[in-house]
Image (cartoon, rainbow over the protein chains, first blue to last red):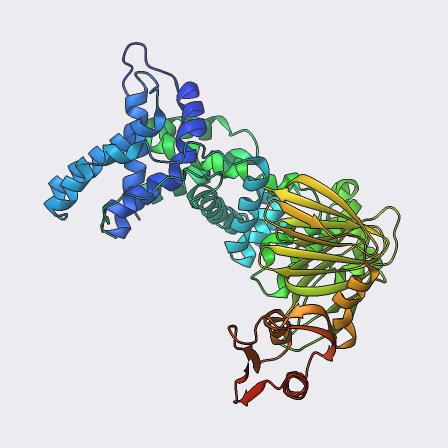
Amino acid sequence: MGAIGSMLDDEEIRDWFRREVLPLEAQLTHFIRRNWRVEDDVIDLRHDVYELAIVAARKGLPVATRSYLFVIARNHLINRAKRARIVSFELVADLELVDHDLGMFDPDRHLNAREALRRVQEGLATLTPRVRQIVQLRKIYGLNTKETADRLGIGSDAVRKQTSIGMRALTDFMLGVNTRVHTKSGAPKRRGRGGAA
Amino acid sequence: MSRAEQAGVEAAAWLIAQGDGPLPPESQAAFDAWFNASEGNKVAYWRLEFGWEEADRVGALGHDPAALVHESRYLPRKRWWIPATIAASITLAFGVHQVAIQQPATAPLQSGAARFAARSYSTAVGGSRLVGLPDGSRIQLNTQSKVRTQITAARREVWLDRGEVFFEIAHREDKPFIVHAGDRQITVLGTKFSVRRDGAKVVVTVLEGRVQLDELEDSRPTGSSIIVGGDIAMAAGPATLVTARSEEKVESALAWRKGMLTFDQEPLLAIAAEFNRYNTRKLVPDAQSVGAIRITGTFPSNNPDAFARLLHDAYGLGIEDTEREIRVFR
């Protein structure tokens, strides 16, 4: 990245990203998945959206992160669709109407500590026994790579590899499960139109 | 490998390396170059950094085997052993860690009780099962019930997943016994009571002593009631209703322990529902003609046929027997 004028530094961007963007990940993923028929692209598209969001935020953090993020996502999907010609015009038209839905998402996506804890526990349960064991050794008993390797009688590279798997899977799980907490009587509604699956 | 995945794998590798201590200068330079190469790398790094920090919460629960109980519901029982096994071997392998780990995780290990720490018990339709717990408590499962228990030197906990269980709790002044049933939590020191759970509805019937019934919202207690011997508390959603003291009612509610069902002026429809908890062949009263008839009495829970014959003899009701059902009508 070239240095342009008074751009926000990594510290500020990182704080914002963690505080306001990541809690929206489940919704964002859902949004992309609903509007993009190639499942294999979803994670890459989300990655693109994060990247675009950060590039733009360097010039100043958005006032409303949610609508900012979803507008970026929508525009990105439209651009990709037009370029790739794999998506029907109806879908593009559909996406252009997305504005109406942006305000309908549940405002508070931050998990409280107990919910987050439960989420981690559920995430742990999805890991293979070996990966889970390594995550537990590291997180509960504070062992480093070397100690974990010695403990299990395996190589440090194997420990790193399994830790990497655990780290990525837990993160996906923590951020990805769509929460339906705090839905009050005026629960957010699904989009009226049936989007492409 | 996709771009996002590639960035994720690289970010994870850096985070793991950094987690083992400060990077040597040449690695640090390599990291800086990678990190600053694209916003995409930063995104991947910050995202995993955040997720991995969140995973620290596992450690925040401390060295407590029970902390790992919740998530294990769908896994074979074998994996309950993992935390205990780890704790034991670490104690042996790393003297330095011993102080931190010793209590409370290894305490039950040393007494051998950890072998029995986490268990699951269930009964089929019409089944009943008496189980002795390692702390001296006894539980009796009624029909179609499932519980998981976690009894260690540090804590005594039971999760009632479905059905009804009678608890006879050995008294331990300093160690409460906790029953989790949906969004209700029952805490006792030593007493006799039963908990019945139908989905979100929880009924606590206390035979002796006192229990504390807490309502949990988002896992935090929001309301608390004390229920004493002779009380029955019914809890559903935000409401908890505690009935006036009635030894008789409690006796009736607990008659199932002797294989009996006791009713006091109950409508036939409700009685049929009660019988049907215990039997695969269902008692089906015609709601319109006979559903509201009220009946008092004590009947064996496993014999709906005898009950139906009684209805025929005493009330002149029609009975139609099929393989699956016993229809009652007028």
